[in-house]
Image 1 (spheres, rainbow, N blue to C red):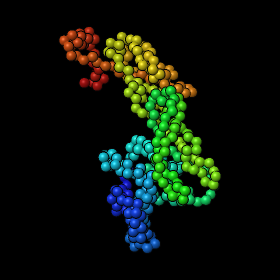
Image 2: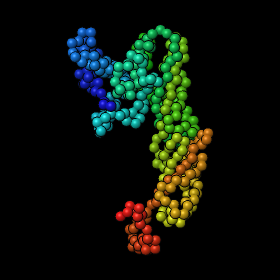
Image 3: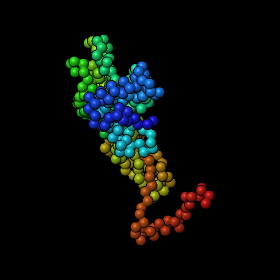
Image 4: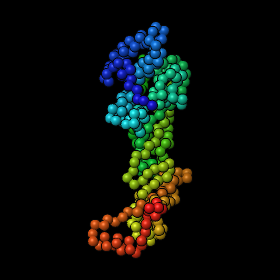
Length: 319
């Protein structure tokens, strides 16, 4: 999938004003409208112009699009194909329908659908009908400790709201979020009534926050399970040992390293992961760390080991 330069499509510079966007769209619409245009590719060009106008006339979409454009300009798509970077939409809030947008956007490109999900709903907002407000989705990144113990956090979101006269306006709002213990990546926290307003007296929609857990210096999260690399010495791996390990809850436990433990061996500490029903586990991945041969005594010890325990780790290579 290629990144689409909507400014280029409308013949505009990056900092073009709303009035310049409107004028450029009108000019191109007169040129490529299928009812009047004699251009052989008028239908395709008109679809491209409509798509660029849909994004650049909308403050929320334009702000999100500009952020993606900055990512591409910094070399964010080195292989030539475009893929939105992780967490690109964090801090933005816009509607994403389950089928990636309404029917009137069916002719829009794969790029538009994959990035925005056709968030347009302005005309529907202006109609006088009874309907529950649409749900919104946004992302929230939390620390592992918040997922373990629960927490209360404030988040700031940018979203489009309607003024008293029905015009869309770009606003920033701050919400208090209660994070329950045991929440895991990909789970949603529902904030009732924090989506789009309803119509005709109907209730507002909900806001769903997709949980993302920030990288931790010790633990890696997979669902409710946690993984930690546990360094051991060659002696501990060969002879077995009792070693101390920090746990996510803040305590320390002793684990048994079995004799002849190999690099990458996985040990399980049951129910030491994220809380839940059932709780997750903590997995320890053994990593044999070699002492440096930086003294005469250390080099002599390695030589004695090579003589006492001859071993060829490349025997299976047949060379």
